[in-house]
Image 1 (cartoon, rainbow, N blue to C red):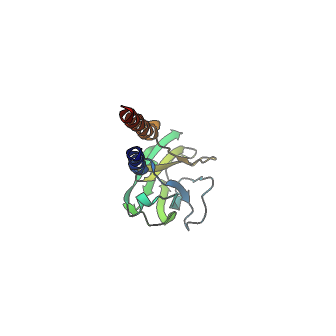
Image 2: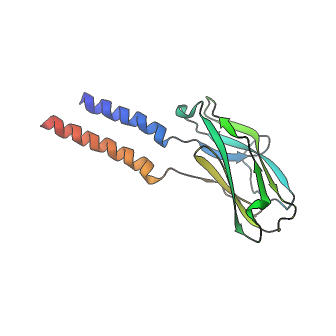
Image 3: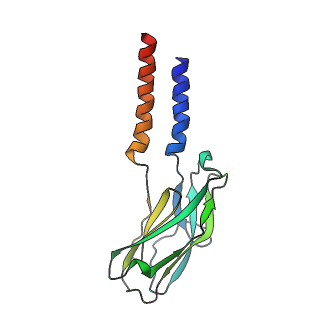
Length: 170
């Protein structure tokens, strides 16, 4: 029984690193509160902050590279109409929340067609935020871990538990 408990605890500790990921959000330039609708006109530039919430102790001190991607949802624009500037990376502090104030700059070219809706994805490490730019509605989509990321470690623990119990009975 002691072995079973030790194996289960070791598996749970290993799972923490697999399933833990902070929750991201985009806040205003001063790092105060989440932004609402994000509607920009051609030639506009906006400065935003990258907010990390629910940071686990496993992530403390990690250096996460910023990533960005632009795609056109509708309209006659192109991905090159949007320019996103971020720092190269961010070091996760030893805190449950952190806001990288003023870290993100989004600019729309002056000759970009009005009314085009762009999807902008900004992330640090494996976690990204998607939002629509130049539309009346904006959403933030936090990616959740895929099913196998959670299910496989749980199945492995249950399998080990049954294996150890059966071995003990023999």
